[in-house]
Length: 398
Image (tube, rainbow, N blue to C red; front, side):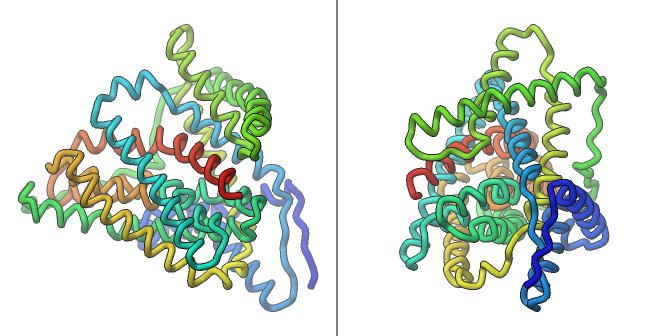
């Protein structure tokens, strides 16, 4: 079979084209917008399917240089580290701290269920991590980023498993969040349905802010500093603990330290919006490149264990949300709205969470506290704790 090799520049160009293709398809197909499926996921999977057809036909297979893909992945997770502001977390109050604690418990449970089911079915427990918090709470970005670490640890096809599970989670997180919240609202008589709903949906991609080129330069230089210094931290942690940490762990920890040092001293204004924008750009390119390189044919032998494992993850999220999260968050309308959002980011992404809450709000009215807490936990702090727990879990199971 002929092998077509793309160097890192070709891979970068392909990633950009697949992103544009995914964006065009999500605009044209309402179902993709309804489930909040990211454009890089759509475009990357389109190319992965094309490559799989080439492989199955015996004509050729396309392979990629992953150098720039790794660079974009590390840069993205470094921007995640910059979101962890300890003073902001303390000021946000007891409810946010409780929601974050429940989120961390969910991460641990998802990994325990996933690895346990895979072990019972005679498969490598690392595949269970791929179906656990890597893909569920982590979403497609974390799945594509950490999948190669599963491959390196002995779970061949780990990236493909994790991304496939993340796609499953995106769909079910969107399908289940709204109906479960409605069930809780109706069962507990929390609020009457509004007579008529006004449908105003803001496009999250159209966010605007005022900036200056110097702030972008400052933000990028901070990123570069944290990536360089963080590489030494990753090496030190690996030697100290005796197992390999993902390359992004050190840069992410340094970014946390830098962000909180800036917050504490107050000498400069932290360029949060600029770094967030760069993070979105790095994530889009990284996802498009990583997903384009998926080897979908590796899923054949894992189809049944994956289905059993993902079904167990769905039951876990449903029962945990209804029996634990909703009561602890107060059993009121805000708690029901938080439940809708929690299921969204617990099985997909923060965008799913916001879409779920918008759907509930159109029928029963808004919940300002839920709109504040869910993006803060799901979009800011959650990725950091999830990445740290995953790194430790891979080290223990490999």
